[in-house]
Length: 221
Length: 248
Ligand SMILES: Nc1ncnc2c1ncn2[C@@H]1O[C@H](COP(=O)(O)OP(=O)(O)OP(=O)(O)O)[C@@H](O)[C@H]1O
Ligand SMILES: [Mg+2]
Image (cartoon, rainbow over all chains, first blue to last red; front, side, top):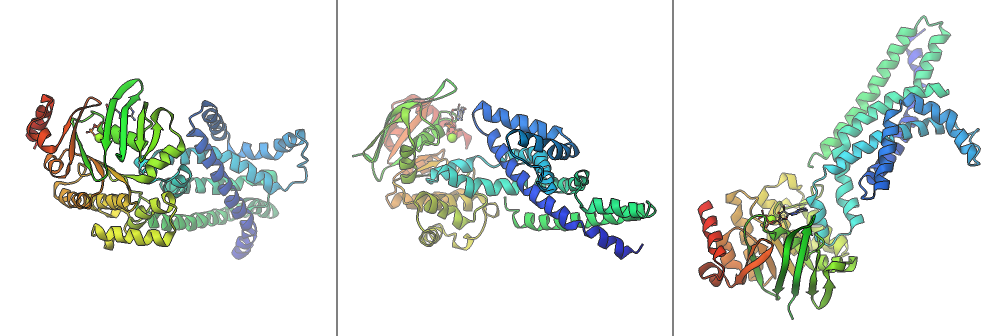
């Protein structure tokens, strides 16, 4: 078995891995922002809701989240009259990861929100800005920059968690590696998984570099 | 008619009375200076004027608009905030905005001005505080004195009827105080109406058309600089002034 052949076979799953990674990362960020917003509300119900979701989402292993999404979500949807039996596996993978990591992202944004210097709210109101503009112009951009190092860490956890989607039968890189090893009756298993490890590592390096560039551009806060 | 008239303003924080019925009147062109011990409620008073804090009760007349302070609505808030401006002790510049953008934000989102016009005004204001060359700098790249002068430019750009200054120099290194004081002096000479909280007595004496001595949530004495500094009615004023003099 040739080296380039192995790499090629594994890279066949790369688009799946990246697709799931990026879409579910964006969705879990949106969930996280929403949860952080809920947690910052003054009424008890919103805060309670945020707390319960965060607890559940953080307390459930990603593998279990994926399995629950794939096997249980269709039953729930069935219950409300939606037939999800033919829906793409990607939907359930992305759903499971987004919801599973949403709680973590919520915590990332919540702590960032709390460390945005409060006196800027007052200054913004004092020049006649309205709440929605204060958030859009002043608070959100800073919250994002403050949260970046934690977002970067979360992103890498996400990357690793995408390798779990094989449990619901999606052909990502990890699944490719397993199949390839099986074809050769496990003889080249170690080599194949080493190559896979190097590919994951390279992806990490690339994204780390992109994050670093971005953080450097915004280090004035 | 006075620009701003406040009657019996009260403010509680968790059942504690911080402002205990303040009456205050300011006419166009006046500079009211507020002096008084730490914790007496001076900052709270300023923030109750532009509603950064919600007053507990009282009445206000601003440019002929009567406002019941117990029942503020959004229109009242915007009326005050869009006709006044504030300069903060710790500058409170927007950290993700350049010096220029710090000034244009209020013009664009408060006064609903278009961006070109806002930029023009901001450049003029930066020029007035001698910081044109810093227009693209972020607050973290500026000295305290420069930040505070941007803070002043941010306020004056709004062309406000009234500017509230909350100890604008007390966070500054001594050698930077002068430049900021000069900018405020310039404003006073142009006839800008202001309320200034300060611990700098020589500055207070020079700039104030009226001095208020504030203690324990109340105005305990008031009058011209000459009266307050040379023959105050309340003997607590003398004690306060000599305590401050000893600090130096
Ligand atoms: N948000 C708040 N919640 C509760 N108490 C507050 C709040 N803001 C101010 N206080 C209290 O109100 C009192 C007056 O505070 P304020 O900051 O107005 O005083 P000050 O005269 O400006 O003092 P300084 O000269 O130190 O700035 C203080 O006892 C303070 O603890
Ligand atoms: Mg104060």
